[in-house]
Amino acid sequence: MANSKEKSSAAKVTKQNRVHSFLVRITVACFSIPGIFSSIACDEKTNIPGQKQTTTFSTSLKPVVETENGSLSGRVSWAGPIPTVEGFSGPISPLSEHASKPRVAWPNPNAPKINSDNKGIENAVVYLDAREHFTSSNANFPPVEVETNHFKMQVNQGGVSSPVGFILLGEGVDFVNKQDFFFTIRARGDAFFSIPLSNKNKPVRKVFTKPGLVTLTTGSGQFWMRSHLFVLNTPHAARCDKDGRFEINDIPTGKHDFKVWIPSWKVMEKEIDAETWEITRLEFTPSPTKKFSTFIKPGSNSSDQITSFELSDLQSQK
Image 1 (tube, rainbow, N blue to C red):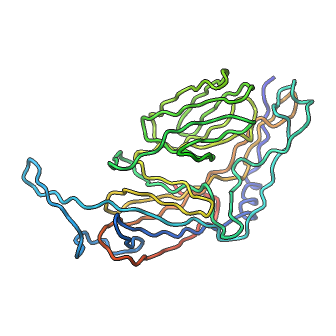
Image 2: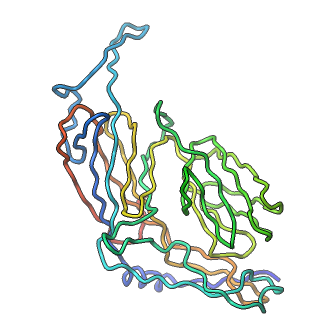
Image 3: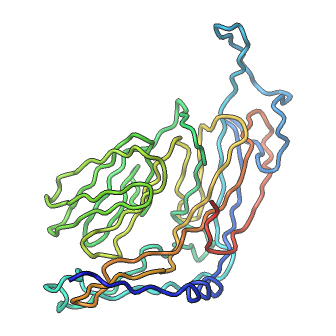
């Protein structure tokens, strides 16, 4: 039978946003390689006293000034009371053959992971918001593997397992099922496909040809299994550690726009199986982002100029 949908009214979503509004505070500093330099709200003049430059000549005999690349470091932290995010209860599958089995407590897949000591937001994402493709010689992303195991979905990259991964436009991701259970990976957002993972431990590779944010869920009803892939034009992005700290290296000099992103945990819509009345899929409100601009420049002294700013609601900024 066809699935029925249970939608929250617009008024209810608005009320939830007021009740659960939060503040995210981001502290950012820039430094060069080598040496540390200030970035936020700094003077954007390109001729900097003491800046190391190398002048080369192109075939048109016009001089080209090559400068050292820089780096961006900082910390993303929570600026309000830590929210309590409720989970869900259900069987391992909404299908009728599993509906009578014991119910299990499943966490909200987008619940923010906030350090209780310093309020740093683990797995928050900071990335260069570049519309055109450019690369740096010394920067790249490690290979990505999306794994399903123990009824969890996680992204394995660079020795870290998390809900978030990064790839460059045109690169591929390996999807692999490591348990004896049939899963279908469902991609939505800036990619649209489904991949059946019927063979245990046999990777299926998918190449991404469109930049943007891709949300991965299962097409087999495990609504709590969820992860995200950022398909980017540049290799300049970072996932925050357990203290909310991040570092992005080898950024070309000049003024750049960055975004800070965390997923929304507020449920906007539930899809219910018509036979078992179990949840099969969740849709969340738009994820909050914060924009900021930074001028990357080498050759400054070691003093840092630090700026913090806040995000006060769950509405993403386009």
